Each structure stands twice: as structure tokens, then as C-alpha cells.
Length: 317
Image 1 (tube, rainbow, N blue to C red):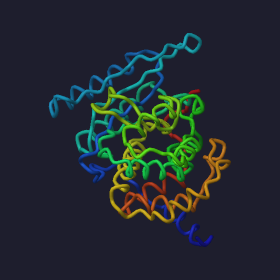
Image 2 (image 1 turned 135 degrees about the horizontal axis):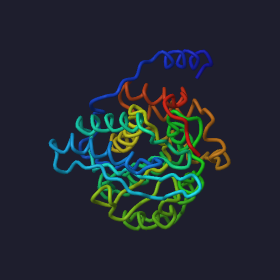
Image 3 (image 1 turned 90 degrees about the horizontal axis):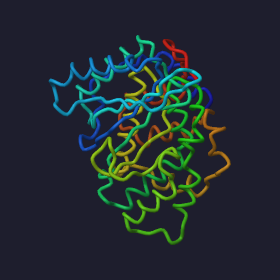
Image 4 (image 1 turned 120 degrees about the horizontal axis):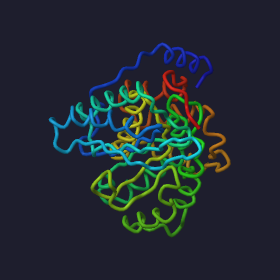
């Protein structure tokens, strides 16, 4: 891309007004679960907003219930680390309304976002339909574009959380090595079992789970997202994963380009130290690959290129 073209794109993105959406137009067969991690002095600061949201939206669905897990009490700081677990959800107006309301209440309380914690999204593995080719295509996409995914996943921050290398290490080098095996099995379940061993649960940017608390079937968990009070950013996260999955079944991925990038993969470039850097070529290629409409693509590129500090709360380490 010519320098002037990138300049024009950045100018366009700077002036782009993004809005919270009622629906993201995702495949209805995609189901998600989400964990959001916060800090609070008093556990009641979490309890009240969650109770209010559950009471408001319970009437719409007897399955709707956000729960919280009291994860850890920090004696030195006198803080509670708390994880909120959403109900299983699809692309639905009721979920996005409740998410926006809950984040607004949390943002206007004394609850804080921790720079040591993040946001995790689970997706049902059944979407692969036990097709090894779809699984490998997904893994290859993730491998060659992981640097773009991480920077996008920083949300409205400039860098990843402090504990990234403990709880969401980059996976691309391991995946590249795995996919490059000459004896790579064609059996779907053998692949899943191998991936569970390689990508240690809660250790890497993505990992594969047994039956999970968030989603009734086996899941893949995405762990590289920073948490935020901004509901648009969380919608962008969900849109990213939904479109990433849909694209592998759309038969419109440039396989030759993907194979070329995979064969010329440079593992030295795929490290957390480099992931905050802008890679305009990879970012634009990725956006063209997985998004089939201009709105999703624009929302993705704005979040990737234009980093805005959290205005309402200061990150707490």
C-alpha cells in the first residue's frame, strides 16, 4: 500500500463515528461465553450491578444470569479480584443491551480494571463440524495474523496486560511448528487432543477445553483481550471471533496467500515485544480476509490503528 493511501485511511478512521450495535449479524449457530475480570475494594460493588442487571433481564429469558466468582483477595492492596461470567449467548439484542447496562453501572461505581487481568471469550467447537480441514485453516489464519490479533485485542490500551506471559502467551510459534509436522494427523479428535497438550489450559492466547462452564460443549478459549468498560470494544471482540469462524466456512479465503505467508513465517517477529507495533500490511490483509462488510471492517481497523486511552478509569496494576 502506498504511504498516501495509508495516510488517507488513518484520516478516515480518525473521523469515523462508531456506535454500539443491536446486532452484529453473526451466524446464529455461533455461541459464546465471556469472562470479565475486575478489581473492587468491597465485593458488594460487584454484587449490586450484577443483581440489578439479572433482575432487569431475567424476565426476557430464564437462562439469563451473570454470575461472579470471588477469585482472590489481595491482602497488601486490600482488593478483590473478581471474574464475571456471562450466560451462554448468541448474537442477540437482549445480550448486548444487558452488557451495555452492566458496563455502565460498573464504570460508575468504584470497580476498577486491572492491568494484571483480562477478558476471555469461549466459543463452541462444534462450529468446526469435526472437520480437520476447517480446524487447520483456522489455526493457520491465527498463526500468521496473531500479531494483528494481539494489537487489536489491546482494545483502548497500548499494550497487553502485565501477566500476558503467564496467562496468555503467544501461540503462533507453537502452532506453526505443529502445522508443519510431516506426520500431522487427519483425525479431528486426535488434533484436538494434541492441541490440548500443546496449548496448556489458561497458559496461551488460545486453548482448547473439555466441556466448559461457559458453553455446554467443548470450547476454544481466546485469552488475549484486555478488559474495558467500553461496550463497543467488547462488541468488536465478539465480532472479530464470529467473523473469524465464519470466514473459514465461506470459501473466500485466499489460500495461496495464506500458504505463502505460512511458508515464509518468521518466528522472531511473533513475540509479545513486537505485538504493539503496527503492521499495516497484515492488518489490512486480515480485515479483507475475514470481514465481508465495510462496517465490521471499519470498526476493526479503527480499533487496530487508533488507540485511545481509557477516559473513565485509570488502569490498576
